[in-house]
Amino acid sequence: MKAPVRVYGHLGELLQGRMGPGRPVALITLPSPALFLELLSADTAEHFLSTEQVKAVQQHCGRTEPAPFRLRTAMPIGAGAGASTAALLAIYRAFSPAPSLDDFSRMALALEGASDPLHVPEPERVLWASREGRVLAHLPPLPGLRIVGGFDGPGERTDPQDMNFPDIADLVAAWPAACESAAKIGDLVSRCSQRSMALRNKRGFDSLSAIAERYGALGVSIAHTGSARGFLMRPEADPAPLMAELTAVNFTYVHSFLIGGQHA
Image (cartoon, rainbow, N blue to C red; front, side):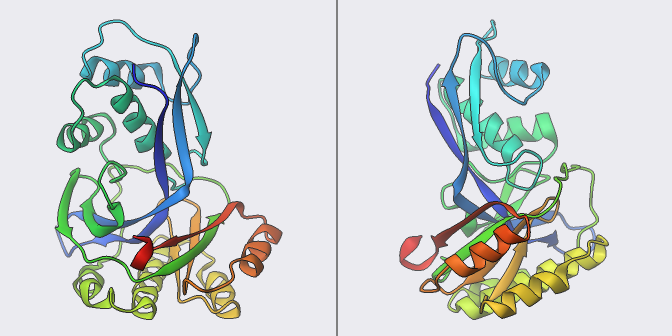
């Protein structure tokens, strides 16, 4: 077993939805360097996965006898941070003799029916079919952005059979050209969040928009099946005032990071 193994999660998605009638659910993830879990050596098992999941991954990696380990989490579980995919990926990397992107994608899809692209280099630069475990398109680098966000309210487990997502084909088509402008990306992300929350009967977009306007944010991102919420700002923006407000209104795991531009 290779340990420790660290895997980073995400603060929900920049976009998520259907690519048109009868087309797959697709997403562009928002990876966060502040959300992660670590697999550590241990004498007894300590993690949030089922025994069956752990056994399946270890057997996939060629182990005939179970090996205990501990997962140290710095992210919420079941809240749109990618904890489930991250945990499977950590076990896979710890035990697989020859790990590969495609092999993990197939395994995760077989076990859970959906996955996040946490194993893909620069995951924010792919359009990912989460229910098919494959890259639909490669995307340009994001413009420089500062992200401020956290988690608002209880978690929500992803249902791989859930297809109740808005059509985002127009937003995806506009994405490559918009990557030249932080403001344009912010607008596309907000439009997707608004569509999704309206379709899924989730209240709160107006409140998020009001916070964004108060602090000069360019857009609002969400976990489309979770409680992650993010605010897209210009890279030079001071995150402290917005972080203080999110903490005051009971967001958890409040943090800020840079992405895109020279930070990609």
